[in-house]
Each structure stands twice: as structure tokens, then as C-alpha cells.
Length: 460
Image 1 (cartoon, rainbow, N blue to C red):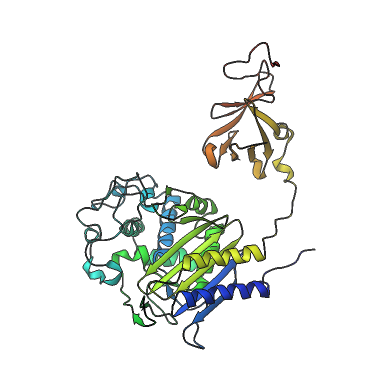
Image 2 (spheres, one colour):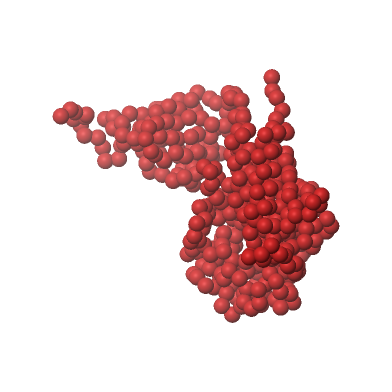
């Protein structure tokens, strides 16, 4: 017997609403919207406003700032998957004459390109895009502050370059590619480059008095791929579900997983995480969150996804500073994860086609020197190698068509694991990147590099 748990419990919903209410009050913001996604579906949204009876809902647009970068990164990954470019390609190969062509596409995605954080001249988020009509106006005379590839340095101009790259390779505008390749397939009809009613207005709240000032809303022009978009909690819920599981209409699961893997360390400060290919990665409350924060004058926003918990938290607000949307989005995930922990999938045996006697004979204990490891089977003829006691290098391995396995994570990522056989066909040992694993620790006659002392084991 199975039971559906689509709706949240009343106590959980009360805790979520309380968190949003506190965020609106303590953040001194005109309005605040929160939402929770569970297993790909929007299961809760709530809001608070300074105007009684006029609170925004999950269909109200807010500006989402740098969350836009994730959409741009997805467009670039689609080009890679179609074979139209490589992540290690220098930008100059596909986008000529920028003056920053030596930087690679992967470096731009992960903010390790060494480019400046902002554009030269006026504050680009609060000034007309007509001041920056060309890429040279975005990059300036000195685009590089560091040597490309050396360190993480967040760069808005870097994502302008990626947006221009999409246009150069696709032959259509960034906005058209975005609409056709992401927004329409995911049903995100309320995510737009310009605001469409109903939408929130952007406000600055005085830091020392309870008064407000309207913020201007500028078209960002060439900088649009770094932060232009307006969206809603409901639309961002659809995007969060995509970031958790992928969608073959937009980007395969394996490519989304690649985006979620650390590509660079974070910069200095309190940020406890790193950066993937267009995604921020954060460790908080014992869980890994992926997503992005965003801000533009008048707005702050955040989307965090916990893939392991099957949850996402969304927080949107219309104040330049004050509301801690990144903290609140993480708290929304934590509240649900702790109050209603995810039920594990039922145990099921592997399909018969994925198991044979040869594979089963490889399972069990293996020894690297005197370190004890266990090898067990996974789905689709994959294997897991993990220490049986103490600390050690645990890794998952995917089966290769030609035999053997390739490491998927940790120290052994990309390394090949294979079973080495004797002339009679029996297994002598496992070879993992030249590390030898034998059935017994230092058994005489085994293929142990350097040999085994002929006198064998001894006491004192």
C-alpha cells in the first residue's frame, strides 16, 4: 500500500509562512514571496506585504537578477551537447574580436576567466544600456584583472560574453534562444525580459528610517544575459525542478549534473561552497544546495535546490537590500526536510539482465595493501568501491562498453577500474589507475607491486 504526500502538513505550512513573515518584517521590505518545490511540484507558496490585502502571489513577477546567469549557462551547455562548441574552446574560436578571446568557455561559466567583476564607467545596473552599445564598452581597455584559470572571481561581463557567444553560434538573439529553448519547453510563460503585469515595483528602503524610494528599472542591453530576467515563484519552481532532474527537451540529466559539479572554488569571505558551470553550490545545515542568488536595484531573489531531499526553496523580494533571500530560501528547504523527511525509495533487486555470475564473483572484500575495501554492484552494471572501516576513498564507477568501469566522483573520477585475469581466465586482481587490489592482504604469489616477503606474516 502506498500513500500520496503531495500536500504539506498544516504545521509545516505554518512554519513556512512564519519564516516568510519574519523575513518581510526583519528585512523591512515592501513584500516577500516564498515557495517550496517537492519532487518536481510546487507544493506551497506564501507571501507578506506592507499593504493589507495586497500581498503578491506565486504568479507575481519580480526581477531575479543574476539567477538569469543560470539560464545563459544552460543555453551554452546546449550548444556543447549539440557539438557546436567545446567547453575548453577559447572564446575567440566562436566570438571574434572581443579582446578577451584567450579565455575558455568553461572559465567564463565558472567565473575563473580573470575578468573584472563589473563594467567600466557608470553603475551598469542603474544606467542606460545606451552607454554600453558594444562589447568593448562592457569590457573596457583592461578586461583581465587576473590570469585566466588561476582563481574564482565573479564576473558580470563574463556572462555578457557568453550571451553574445550564444547569439553568434545560434544566429538568433539571446532572448529568442532563451524563449525557444528553455522557457517554452518548461512552460515558463511568466518569465520575461521586460516586466509583464502583475509585477512588483522595485524599492530602496532607507537604512535608518522606515521610508522608501522607487528604484529605476533599466534595460540592461548587452548585459541582459547576466541579470535581465523577471520571473515568478511558480515559474522558478518549474526551473528548480529542471535543475534537480534535467529535462531532455532542454538539457539531459547528465549535463545538468555536470553543471552542478564544482568547477572552481569560491572567492574569499564567508561563502561555504563553490561554483559549478553557471550554478552556485552551498553547504548549509548539513546538505548541499545548488542554485543562484540574484539582485538588481529594487530586488533580491534566490533559488536553492537540494537534490538529495527532492526539495527547492524560492525567495523573492522587492527591496534593494535588507531581505536575506539566500538564507530564507535555504531555511524553507530545511523546514520541510526536517518536518517531513523524504521517504526512501523501496528496496528492489536489480533487473536480471544487469547481473551475471561473472559480475557477482567480483563483489566482496578486496585489499589495497592492508586497506580493506568492499566492491558491490549498482544499477546498470555499475559498481561502488568503498572502505570497510576507517577513512578512505569511496567512489562510484560506471560500466564501460569495452569492459571495466570509469570513476564518477572523488579521487578516482575519470580513472579506470578493470579486472585483470590470469591465463586461465580467473581474476588475479583489480587495477585502479595502477593501484592493485587483491583478494587477500599481501598474499604470496599475488600480483603485488614490489613483491611480498617470502617469510610471510610473523609475530613479534
